[in-house]
Length: 275
Image 1 (cartoon, rainbow, N blue to C red):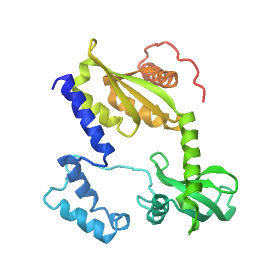
Image 2: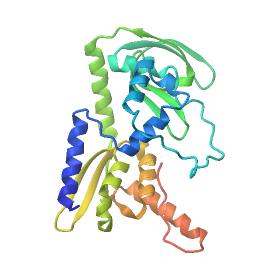
Image 3: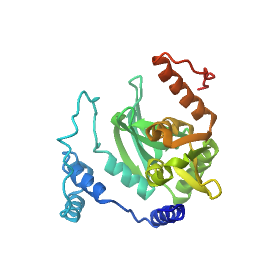
């Protein structure tokens, strides 16, 4: 496949995403069919949705991993799907307000705090669900573990107020975002689809330098997303390199230096990283 075909395919997929069309491969369909057999799938989906998905995937095969995957000493996971996710997600999609009661770190209980929920987030590190919401009284953005929520109820909120909160959130997030430039090593241009898939969850743009036959990926992200981006860069290995983003460069240099030190190889010392 030549570079222009790659660019066309990427643009085509991007336009499909913009229209709400979700494209899946046969491999992904098999994975989904396998995941629907998980015990918590019955909680994650309504009975009608689960039945419809299974009917759509009836001709696909299950993904059998028993022969080549062995799970050992996994970390404890409190819940894959929490029963509060569905009603909270409905509040968010309907742009409704709420009164929420929850427990804080020292064991105190905050009762019936008025708020506006806007996002559900899952921490891959802590393996826990979080509710992100706006505290109406304190005018502050909050993050609460779903496990710490004792109760909540729907409360009316005007569309104007909801729009103002979301606009304020958007401005804050935009101000906190930084831009990182990542270059695809030319020898791996043929793996562009795989590389772009690794960065698919980030806000990004792709530039192609025809003279040098190089792709550059511009990623905009928040500071707290750096660790996740680093994991993707490490996963891609020598296929990519960071060309703009001092913090990421230092972290990659620090990791490489420690790796070389294990084998008794000296390397230039990285500068201290500011937190």
